[in-house]
Structure formats: structure tokens, C-alpha cells
Image 1 (cartoon, rainbow, N blue to C red):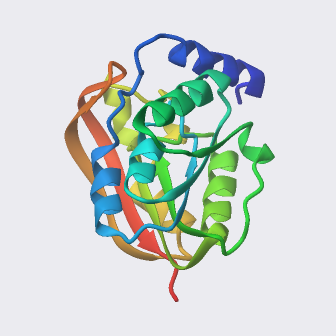
Image 2 (tube, rainbow, N blue to C red):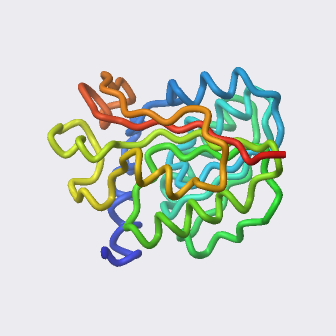
Length: 205
């Protein structure tokens, strides 16, 4: 497992250019779901440079976000300021964030890849943090992404499949859970043919 300081340095380096590594536009699946859902309080873990947080805020959501990269946080806040919105953005490791039970109307998990222990912890805390009727919007790389050179970890244990997510989010009613082959166009880092998995689920009222 990589040292947290090493991982923070890696992300600081990735975000340490004037260009936004994943662009300034939101993830397509995320934006589709945001547009269909009445705004409330949203959490975005691993939010990086803020493209999804800013989009949600522009659509009326109150947004909490966190990431281990100080560089990512600064770029996110700069993007929010430029767009005239506010986001509540914390810097820190996953284990540092205080998840509040029964608190969020939505949680967005966009390409948050971690070792299996951290993944299980995150997904459990996400489910606990939802209000009844709250939703999870997830897009990440499928295990078959290892055959592509278009982003994501090369360690298969940090990638997802349907069985893994079905187990992790067993507490939710799943509306949509599917592997897709698509062409990514998200900044210079996510470009080209990719194997992704998408999940949309809700905590029953």
C-alpha cells in the first residue's frame, strides 16, 4: 500500500500545472444525474480540482468535498470563485474525514480508486452518511481497464466490477449498475477508449 504522503505528493504533482488534469467540465454521468435530481446537500470525496463540485454548486447544491491534495483544493477553490459559487472543501486523507451519519442527499464517487481496505471503508461510510432517499452516483474504472492506457490504476485490486460494487453497496436499492466501454474526453489525463463501471443507488426511505 502506498504511503499516504507519497500519494499526496503524486496528486500534487499531477495537479501542479496551470491546465486542469481532468478538465473543468463535469463527468458526463454525474452531470446527467445532477440535472435529474432536486438539489440538496452533496458530498464529493476525492474531488481533486473541483470540476464536479463546481458543477453541482452551479445547479443549486450545497457541496462538501475533500481530497488529500492541497494543490487540487486550491485549483478547485479558484474554479469555484471564477464561476461565482462556493464549495466547502477540506484537505486531508480519507481516514481524516468525519462522515456524518444520515446527513447527505447525494454522494458522488468519481474515479475514487483505493486499496481494498480503504475502498470498503469508504463505501460503508458513504452508505451510512446518506439520508433515506439519498443517492450515490459512481463512475470508476472497471477491472478490464488494465488493458487500456487511458487512465486509472494498473493494480487490478484497485479497480471495480459488478460483483464488488453489488457487495459494497448492498445496503442500497440499486437503480443502475453496469460496465460500459466508452470514449473518455476529460482533460489531458482521461482521453480515449476506456472500460468503466457506473452505479446509481438510493437508501430506501
